[in-house]
Image: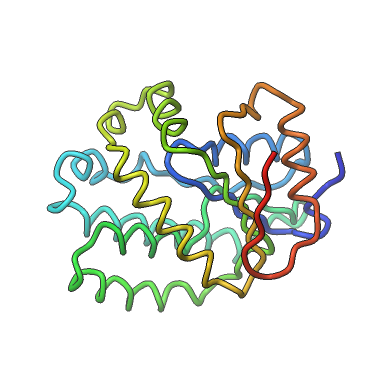
Length: 215
């Protein structure tokens, strides 16, 4: 496989809950020895309560995610590993705003958006944003299979809202190339041919804005 980091040194991997973002980053590191930045979502003390009472805990859960993501990215880009300049991250900082817009009421979101605007200006955008798109039923199967207790009651309607938020954002974002890959039920973790095909897509040159691909 050719190394996509030669033209995209910083690749952010995005997707809905259960799409395989973190697994894909690990696979990229395995093949190309890149640095990986992985979201520590289990460290969020409000997340289990949010899944039970979303209206009550939406603001603290989103605020915690935003500050932790910012801290993690800032620490990495302030002192990068000089021997591993290539980076794959399993999130794009703008996801902070997309989830918040979906989960917060209007007043909370206005405040959150002001805080986000300050924090978002302090580190570079990725050279390529890859979105792993799967149908809702495939996401639900993956969520059930990985067995995280706090995720087992996630409604398909919530996943659809998140998916729509991403896709609406992609339509209007023209400051970086965005590659949306339709994966369906394909398993790149166990099927090396699928992984090779995804990497081949990532390795192509893309213009800024939305680019669609299907395996």
